[in-house]
Length: 322
Picture 1: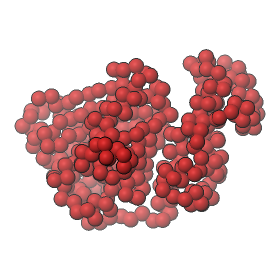
Picture 2: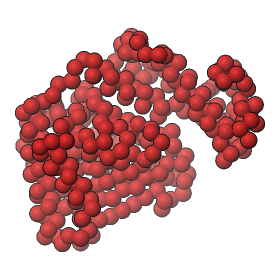
Picture 3: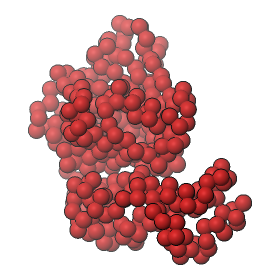
């Protein structure tokens, strides 16, 4: 019996890595649509640990956004719950209209039978998560309880949450040293710990204040913007529609922030262009090509915006960087 199976984008070309990753996630977890500012140089690795009645999957990958829509569910639904444990950069998650921003050490539950949005924040490093598959028959969750827990940050630093997190980390480190009979028992223990953890979380939910919910939503929106800068149609209306809010509410969320949503999009695009123009590995790409890569439709508009922001033309910045 093969206990661990590992795969990585290093097995394919840089050009094919992003598409390969999307297919791999669809096969190992569930079909989703993903986008990433690193699609042309995407990095990712996954390790699946078979535990007979369940399994644990460990992922490390370039920052991205993942969306599971109704069409994905109609195409393939394994009808499973998944618990995931965050190891690295923050993750924004939304399911059943619950919004949360998860940091390292947090856990959350999602259901493959409902639409799901995840944004993995770009902090200059790979995102890392572990997933524990939970067969519905093994999780005595009523529908009301499940809907309340989905997409929320679950208390994982004390009690059964801390035990479960430590157990998952231990499985990841020791599974390949275990015999099949041990793995069957270990999988059963993981399911029991998960059931206990979810029951405890359901008994004492910690509702978020309105202010905290707004902070979480703003953080998710900023992450979404960073992951979709290359889309020339990225605008307040598209952002509001993706997050199931009105454009008016979107602007209200950023009313007390240093800049508007539109200004945030423009600034982040200019920052990406400025970095690419200074990158010697991209010296063969024209200024217009780089501007288009980050969502500017017209090179003239980009040049004017760049000059206003940095006091020089894009071509002058490129020559000075050399």
